Length: 174
Image (tube, rainbow, N blue to C red):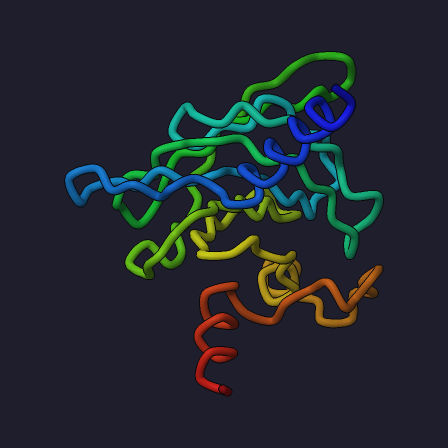
């Protein structure tokens, strides 16, 4: 009886680690698991991509830190260069709704299992589609802040390029 109930969380964890199946929808969208990396000092509520996802993510403690959400499954990303991002901030005790456009990176790369929204300090964002779980990106943070002297906490977890670029390079090395 004990073994039966301990397997349920293991099976759930295994299925979540696989990401979505990234099934295609008539060539114009793809279903992927969704998460958010917040590089800004804003607390973000109800973060959505094209009305899907509904994530909450804490603020980075300071510029150079990153906060992250868990993974939600699945959202459909349409094939277009920019997607609409909606989010809510609570400034001065008052909820404020915001909408911005995020550049979609790597739509044509396959396979695709994850979409990570990199929300940057200047209220801009990049939506990275990736075959593996993406890491925080220092290239995006530095470009958004125009400051390459930012001190990164746990610098080893930050990438200089998209996850797909890193995966292609690592497979060519073998």
